[in-house]
Each structure stands twice: as structure tokens, then as C-alpha cells.
Image 1 (cartoon, helix red, strand yellow):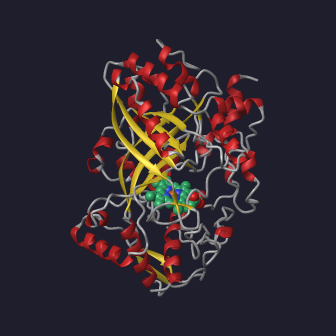
Image 2 (cartoon, rainbow, N blue to C red; image 1 turned 30 degrees about the vertical axis):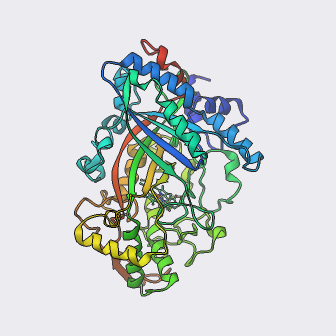
Image 3 (cartoon, protein in one colour; image 1 turned 180 degrees about the vertical axis):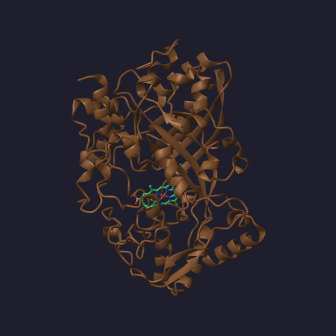
Length: 496
Ligand code: HEM
């Protein structure tokens, strides 16, 4: 079979079988954390900048860094297997990955024509801010205003080992660059043992699924989460074969104002006529998120059902107007589930629905629920002074270190973020949507009674709880590229 045919077939492949020779070769050539999440409880995001005119030193450093820390997708799978077989007793160890921005490719002295060619990747997230309707770069945290050249992602269940490896990763950096910034993420587990984000909602439920064994659980009668490899990967132009795959990565540091969220949930419960009840708070939050805190989709149920309700097998076919799950709800904005057979698409960009692989992790301290009155007070004070509630309470910030992997930034992440921000004229997503500094979210109509066709609406201005602190577009290069970059004088790119 001709090479080109082979690789287009691979990118269309779904339900991958890791026992097949071709799939295992592919997993050996791909970095970890793309097709499956690392699942570790701690993660470091280490941002680096390479010095100008130090191309060769930077290449040598990158190759040696990759040899020390990078995990292949195949290793990640094997370690996960061992961990499962040992009933969680054997540690899965560290998962490491190295990502480059377009500026990073340039600092390595590689000709532009050879670097990954997605125009959004090349322009950078800050430059795309106008198209996205994102807050301007001037308001971002300083380390992100000039996008760093590289990001090293390290994850481990053992925080001490992770810190040691973080230091080890920087060995030799002084020859070619400097450390810009580090962000530490920690998985949040609630009292019921669920992995949640800071607003308290179970996260990581709906993901594109690539492996055949992942598909046994849900039954998938209404929604098929199967995805072709081509939604997450492209052939790395600097790899050594059509099996050398890489992935575009969107990183966003998203601060979550939990006090403000809780205040708005309480006010919205009031607007729904359900003030002061546990049921009212649960429903109000679920209308914003699209799921209850335990993961039960509000598209299926009026109230939370516990873990047995946290299915991903639902769609919007019986609720086009959004009487159960509002069209502005975060999960519905991000995945309308209105088109059938989403995963049987060819995988070509024009036909690819905007799906994205999410691998984010929370950062910052948990805000306990018990001092709710004090929280609502500082949230009110914050509103009056224009500061964040965390600042008013004299606390460090919390949020999500969002990471999204895909094959086409414009067709995937940017389509979702533009939608969330209301930039395409559609409803504003109160969770992922960004409100410009000094502005308030707009009022939207929400169904007052669950599932009532054409029923009364409650108008409520939801949002402004999540603020972009900075971010960037990166590429996760193939293992072949990372293994050879130190020896490349004139890059021998595949297909160049
Ligand atoms: C701090 C910000 C955010 C929070 C707190 C948040 C929270 C959540 C939660 C609780 C879910 C439901 C659980 C699940 O299906 O996994 C979810 C789903 C999702 N989120 Fe977010 N999210 C945030 C930002 C974003 C951003 C920036 C994007 C992309 C631009 C995004 C895309 C998605 C997608 C695609 C889904 C799955 C929808 C589905 O298939 O049903 N989220 N998010």
C-alpha cells in the first residue's frame, strides 16, 4: 500500500487495537497523555525559553530532556496495565511530555516550512484573541504575554518524586535558555471520591474514545464517543515515517471564582423559584453546567442520581429547544450532540466535528463549602470593589490548567471557544465563556421548570466566573523528532 494511503487510513482508524503491530508501532512513536489521560494526581507545567542564536545547544538540550522525561503512549499503556493488575499498589511512575510553540521551533533553528503548519499554531493564542473574543494579552499574567518556547509536562502520584524530576528536567538548560514559569496542578477528589473541578462538578466524563476496550462500558445507544485518531493527531512533518504522529495542544490557565459562582447559583435558584432548597441549588448549577455535581446529565434527569446516573450515553434529539438541558449549558455548548453518528466522519478537517481531547488538571486550594455565608459576603464586597473574591478574602487563586489536544486548532478548540464566548452569535457559555475585563455577562433565558415544553423562562446573567490568565498554542512532537533533534544539522523531514 502506498505510504499516503496508509497514513490517511491510520488517521481514520477508530477502536484501535493495541495488540496489532501497526497500532503498537504508532503508540511507540507518539507522546503520552494524548490518546489517554495520565490520571496522576499531581502535575507540573514547566515553561522554558530558549536563548537567541543558541539553536544547536537548544536542540541538544531538547533531545537529552526528552530522553530523560518523555513517556511514549505505549509505555503509558503498559504502566497503566501494571497499575490495574496490582490493584493500584504498583505506582504508575512519572508521565512526561515535551511540547513546543512555533517560536520554539524557530529558536531550534528549524526552517518555518518544516514546522507544523496549522496557521493558528503559528499565529499563537494571543494573536488569535480578537477572533476568539478573548480578553486581551495585556491582562494576562506576565509569563504568558510572550508565549514560552517549550512546555514540559510532568505528572506523578508522588509529589516529592515529581518535584525532584522537575529539577532534573532543567539540567543543562543554562547552556541554551532559561526557566520562565512553573504551574502546579493537583487532582481534586470530593468527599464521595469523585474527580471534580473547583466548582465541585465531576469532570472528565465525556471524552473522545480511541481504543476498542474503552467502549464496552456505556452501551452507547444514543451517543457514540468513538473517535478517529485523526481528531487528535497529525503526521509530524519532522517525524521519520507516516507513523510518527504529533498533536496540537491548547493550554489555558483559567482562574475560577468559586465564591462568585456559588453566589450566582444561589441567586439563580431564587430566580427559578427554588430559593433556599438543596434541590434548587443543585438544579441551578446543573442548568449552567449541563450535569449535576455527580455527573448526571440534566438532559436525562431532573435531579441527581449519584454515580449510576453519570452516563455519557445521551443526546439532544428529544430536547431540541433546550427545555431540559439549556442550549447555553456548558456541556451542550461544547458538544451539542445534535448530529448523529459523529464518529463515523472521515476524519478530514472539513467534516470533523469540533471535538477535543481534554487533559486539564485543577490548581490552587479547595474552597470548602462550610463557610458559605462568609463566601457570599466577600463575593458581594468583590463585586462592589471590582476585585476578585479571592483577592478580597486574601487568598490564593484556584482554577483549571486546561489542556486540549487536537489535529486542527481552528476547527476544534477555536470553534468551541468562539462558541463559548458568544463570538459566533450563539448563546454565551457561562463556564468556558470569557467576559471582557470590566464587563458583566449578558442576561439569557433559562427554562424555569425542567422539561416543560414552551414553559416559563427565567432571565439570568450567568458567567464571569472563569477568567483567562494566559495560555498558548503548542505542538506535541513525535518521539522520532525528539530522539533525533540533537543530531539534526539539516532536518531530514519526512515528506520534506
Ligand atoms: C474552568 C473552566 C472549565 C470548567 C470548570 C469546566 C467544567 C466541565 C465539566 C464539569 C464538564 C462535564 C464533565 C465531562 O463531560 O467531562 C465539562 C465538559 C466539557 N468541557 Fe468543560 N470546563 C471548563 C472549560 C472548558 C473549556 C475552555 C473547554 C473548551 C474550549 C471545555 C470543553 C468541554 C467539553 C468538550 C466537554 C464535554 C462535553 C460533552 O461531550 O458532553 N471546557 N467541563
